[in-house]
Length: 536
Image 1: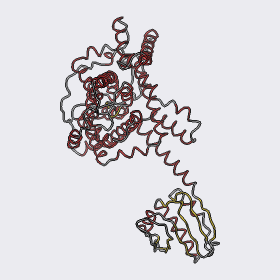
Image 2 (image 1 turned 180 degrees about the vertical axis):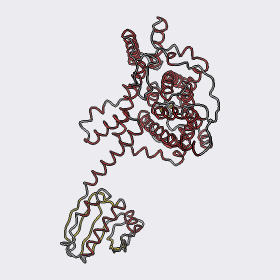
Image 3 (image 1 turned 90 degrees about the vertical axis):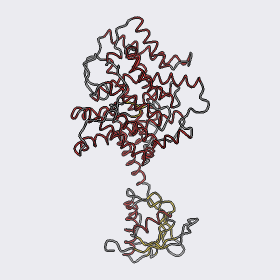
């Protein structure tokens, strides 16, 4: 990994892009500052959800954010402590303590590195677009619900993943003031770009509202009401757990779940940011970066993390396009922890909530509401299903469910496509022109296309418009061939593609004689002899 990093550095991939001047640097730094301010309450809140000290969440936000910004697969993405991981960690911390969490984060990182080395990131392309829409919508709702805890009296909240736990709402007067400040922040973010883009609109919203609250002395919840963020540099720390199989048995299930959730959320965010910045690729590199970041974080007292769609949206919409913004966000966060905690703790939570509400509005795929009645019914169902499961359970479960449902729907639709056209040749043979893919779903439908008893002595099955896909397809072809053999009739296969031909020969179920042209793969007729399989 270090060699790869050094190689990319020597090739200039990690240097500022051509045309990176003072103006671009200003935009990137201000974008990073905005992200860092938004990271503070998120990291603290997710630390509370996981049942650990706030600094454990802040250190994770710093370390994961810094490392992924340097070597991640997509410049502009922001990573840190997330609620999707925190809700899994809470049971581990409650039962075994924080040291087991650190060990789990290390193992989680190693698993993610393995996924990157094996280039498993490419499988994210199997996620259909309706699942992506459901993911975006569900995550937008989760971000919104997570902000509701800021409207409740501190000290009365329950640890939940989405901020929907119990607790008392703020008194009417305080609630009205809080909502007013949130609305003011959102109005500034909406209106600022119409006058100037010198300062990112979210940063302007935070600064103006914070200045107003401090100058007037308004009594509203502030960052300091969550917890003190004052601390030192994260120190190297080997998790204090027994190095035995029992420890491995405890942490492995959590590590696998955390690694899967982290990679799924990171890769989906990578795709989303890629669509906004017109860039592609980098999935396996992102797996490696997430793995290295979490491995290091586990050794420095952090709770681990993954890509954060909310902060990534803030960064992209504030103008962040390079690695500089992500690095700046991490370093600003460290500065807050070391030197500027008293100042940051004065920022009203309403300003940060307003920023996140604007992120929700910008993240939610509003066009998906319009197309629900226009797309196929199954696609609309998948969008709604993934959205609901994301909110009710978690992202990983929602994506897996969405992919499975989409795959089953695709298999069913293809299974219904199998059919055949028939005609007689001048020599008296009957030709079946099979159309549609032949696989496990359509194997039964394929079998009923033929009439061995009433067909002539020679039957030709033409696969020019079909494809033999799997073992079930081979079994289906063998079963049909055996029926014709039992009737004393000959069957020939025509226009099989080369890979289908290889499948048939490799399986040994049917012995196929052919004179394929190896260079041009000219389709010819295949004479089929039944193999000796299962007593046949």
